[in-house]
Length: 229
View 1 (tube, one colour):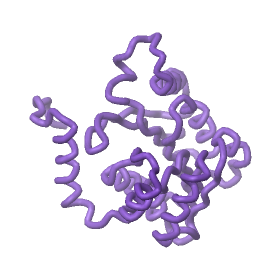
View 2 (view 1 turned 90 degrees about the horizontal axis):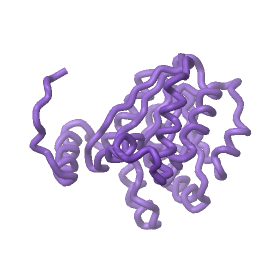
View 3 (view 1 turned 90 degrees about the vertical axis):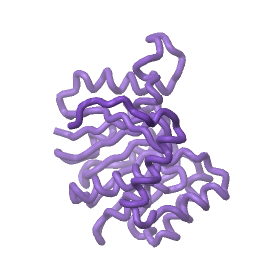
View 4 (view 1 turned 45 degrees about the vertical axis):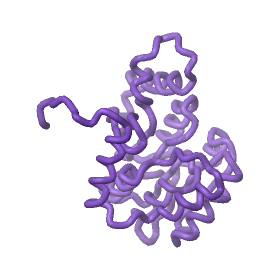
């Protein structure tokens, strides 16, 4: 690893330019670009992962040979498409979404990407939908990107439904540094949700995990990466 150097990139605009520069070399085609456009037309919030993050999810799924993937938080299906593109012919992705509107747009986007046969969108509160899933066919990878106050609930269910060696990724756990920097009595429910998950993981002997901070065209945030032992 390189030694620390003071960054000349000091603004979100610079971070976005850096992402665009690297993407120009490393992402020849964004398979979910049309999903971004259709989601915007349908006025879905622009909170999906970035192209670089989508490519990372795709590479991660491919690197572990994932055949069964679970996603919590579909939105318009942008990350869903990146993940599903990593699956083999007999692979399957299950994605959970609260909003009927978001699910409808996601199904359109997934269909346009030619992935309807590999992806199932389940609609309803994820905590309830989890109860319908059984670990007899365990998942290889879980991506959690939904309401942050429920992070721990989703993570515990992800553990229940995954095989030994599976990867669990939780997005948006740095939140511009607020998770570490806000006072202990903060009323920020998203920060509290992340802290609750971290506190639990400190004593969890069933997984090994780390947090990686990120900057890019989605700002300053980060994700938690865990392996089920």
